[in-house]
Amino acid sequence: MCGIAGILHTDGQPVMRNELEPMVSAMAHRGPDGDGIRIDGNVAIGHRRLSIIDPEGGRQPMRNEDGSIWITYNGEIYNFVELRKELEGRGHRFRTRSDTETVIHAYEEWGDDCVNSFRGMFAFGIVDHRKRRIFLARDHFGIKPLCYYRDGTCFAFSSELQAFRRLGGVRLDMDLQAIDQYLWLQYIPAPRSVFRQIRKLPAASRMSITFDGKVQGPEEYWKILFRSDHRRKAADSMAELDAILRDSVKAHLVSDVPFGAFLSGGVDSSAIVAYMAQVMDRPVKTFSIGFEEKEYDESPFAETAAKRWGTDHHLEIVKPDALGILPSLVRICGEPFGDSSAIPTYHVSRLARRHVPMVLSGDGGDETFAGYHSYLQWMKYLHTPPPPDPRPCWKKLLRPLVGAVFPKRYPPRQKPGSRVEEWLRLINYLPENRRHALWRTEYRSVARLPLDVLEEAYRNAKQFDGVNRVQYMDFKSYLPNCILAKVDAASMLTSLEVRTPLMDRKVFEFAATLPESFNIRQFEGAGWEGKLLLKKVMEKYYPREYLHRPKRGFSIPFHKWFAKENALHAQIRERLTGSGSTLFDYFEMGTVTSLIDESNTGAVWLLLFLEEWFRQNKTSA
View (cartoon, one colour):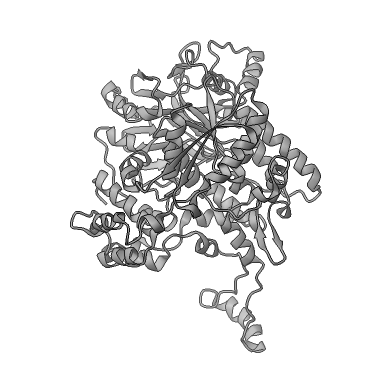
């Protein structure tokens, strides 16, 4: 994979090499195979490269034939061969075999709408000297990151937040409401970032800025839509899904370098390995991590799948070194990020990178096929009858009339699933009262409802039924801002490219037509189960008991690592409550101490990550 950056001086002043070069150098881990910078007056772009396709011909920044268009690009376009043939038929001439050049010619042919033709993961910046502007775009699901900075005379963009700290003369002010959102969700949802001056381009979005500073966008170019087709038959849908997944995996294997696969032992990664093994002419290299704590260790299941397909399997046992990797994780994330599964993701990425520069993973399967525990809880909530109304009949009849006159004082009773707060209760890490108590008095106003981004997403989700509603919420926020951000950051820390065949337009567009009962269903005496159709397809390749066991998730045994009898506990307490802690500029010591004493390991990890981020980023609030 790669790192991209660019600078535009909207006042016409030339960009100096020593302005852009530090930003590019800050992302050397994203591209160890080379770098490049292109400066043209008041606009400049830079690139760090991890060579996957056309190692010799794909160097960047890359230009079109006459040098009027330049690109810095991060990603892979899996249908670039088909697009290239179409563009050649329209008169375009190619000098390389790289997908980067296909993006350039697609932009020449279709302009901003070129993104509608791409199947893949991407984030890029195009300098168009004809139109005198920069065009930015990010892929449909937000697999690849892109953020931008803007002040009076400078516009800059980058793959990583931390690169902007190398941009001289800029002011970065901390956004405390963004930090409160982090404490709530464990991530900061786009377009917000931890800095007021920096925004993250949302998934499936594009924008442009002219050389003199006029901004258009960001605008969404593709929408997440669920349209259940109740005419579908289960058997036909199984066959269709089987073919679509096979096609997606095959498309994601386009590469000029060796590759492998993450294999956790779960349904999603096991599915990817099954298809890889069937379409490849050599054993798949698979990579897993395990834990000494057996209740968290899924490595035996991964080994079962590896033996089933005869893979070249590699396993590493992860020890309790959370604090050791913490500074590096904080540095590459660039802002508070509390998903602790970044730790095992880093370890499995480091293991894989010793053998290959690229892997496939099963990320996105839970969102696409309704596999999360939270979805099961949501369905249970929707199907639980509300408690009986204890009011006398005359009050029940009178209430709507009084409510019509005094709607704020007497709002109508809400139906189950009608408010975003009901979903947030299932997914939040620190509820409002605990966040309120955590902040020092002078900052408590930041801990407030509503959470505007999720409020808007929920309003849009009301057009969908049941589980599709919360799937939409995850596609708009949790998936791009947490799951995919984690995979990108942890893998890029080791210079490994990760591709996600379940995060594919064709896969999603098929899955979005499935009736709810194909994915999630209530079983008598057994509660709810999700991801049903995918599991049924996988019964062709794995034993039924392997697929239908309880879901564990990719989690860390923090409750043992952070336990009071463990030596790590004393280090954590000193780090968070000692005299050198950075937390007490903003938080109450008593509340921090109580979270540690309660063994609230999720909250403790949020605070550990945040404390390290404060150490690395001395900014004004």
